[in-house]
Image (cartoon, rainbow, N blue to C red; front, side, top):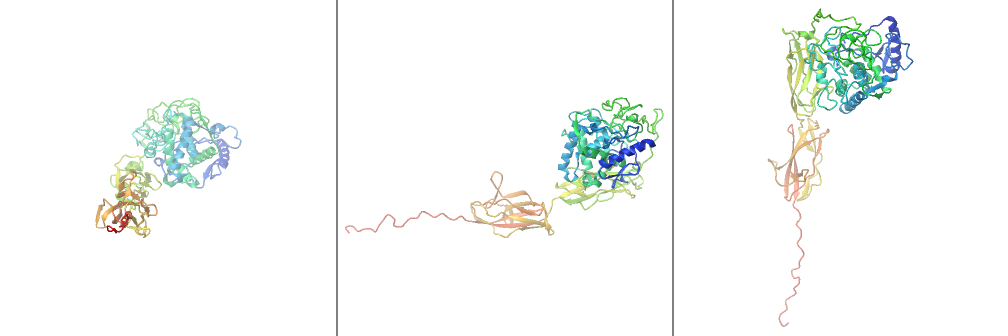
Length: 602
């Protein structure tokens, strides 16, 4: 990312040397595709944070996270202040409800996006780093956290600057956003990424089933295949744009892949070190207000992993009780202690987003595509100041609104794009689904309340301009019988196969009279009753269609079956019904039973 907002763990030289050995040992066996640099830090071949990514473009707003590493495969070094924590086999235990949520989410993604290849262990790795598996599994049977999990308010004071986007709906903070829930989504991301994972009709970031499913869909956007290391790295970096974060998650991913087990809810181990803290052992950042896995809190001293500012045991963190809007008071050892109550915080510097006055169309305002096709026009929005000056480096969110299955490239209904030097953000290619009709694409500025800009999109029926029979055999039957051959046709558009095109079949009175015939050949409905018009027929991917069986009533003659499609293709198929052969009368002889008349007296 262009600027890292989360403060990283800072340690003395002696501590660094020990930590380097620990990380080097981890990287050798626990980070797929990872190497170790001269300082013992993990790196990957394609793990460079995106230069265009910023806090409000990530899932978490680049909030702090737990930096504890999984246990080493080799013997642990002697305990030393600042050494990455390696607790042993207990770390492999994942609370039962939390584990179930991860596995259910991964199963759902295997069906919804099979090409993503999302392992549930990746969700577990991120859940560990973000919240210590929902603070050791402090959830109820439905997956709701026993108290809200909130990151620090993102007020630019040592963290990212993300002003309130949800009016406090998710984080109870109407001034600034805070990461929310066990997977630590910021409200503006949850608004479009949120999912209902437990089927209760709600999308709650503090429910582990909802949060895990949302995280899965978030990681599977953009067409990423997580079985490919480069895509895996990109997905993790999109969650929190930090190389340190990437390497920590990869270490836990590999650790969980080697085996894990279920433990009772509320008994999971909780990490103690956070990316924005210094200190040893227990969470020295307890006075910072909260951590990536905690609620907010105040005070100083030796805190638990919950960030409450108290002295509770890490395995049983207390409830979060301090209102989330409380500014971070003490940082617990970080170099930004925060303002005192008598000294209001300094106003953060204006960002490009703060200067945006309005959005303008910078591309097609109306666009049309046939079902299943990509829209030829691209949607663009331009961010401007009040005087009409372009504003670069502003996040524009494009959201598909309405009853449609259209999506952007990658399969998502939302895309966030950074404006370029001319102030323009161009949305990804929009692809029509199978639902026809109109919908809207709405452009908004991330992190600033300005009027939205809407784009009207219309999906029309798939079309064909030609229909032909696949064979030229005559179609005949006798009255009261069944046609031996079924009608098979092929649809094309501009010479190419026209797949999934809707076709209507009607038995008309004649080539010149399109009215439905009330006699002659017919189809049958599910109950076996005669039907002379069929709708809802559709060609296959190759443009082929075979109609159901045809029957004939007792009317002989020549009839017409008319096939039509959207796009104007029409085909008349002649049908011949021959009169049934007359049954011969019983044979009788003209003189049967009577001989020649005998003359009387002969």
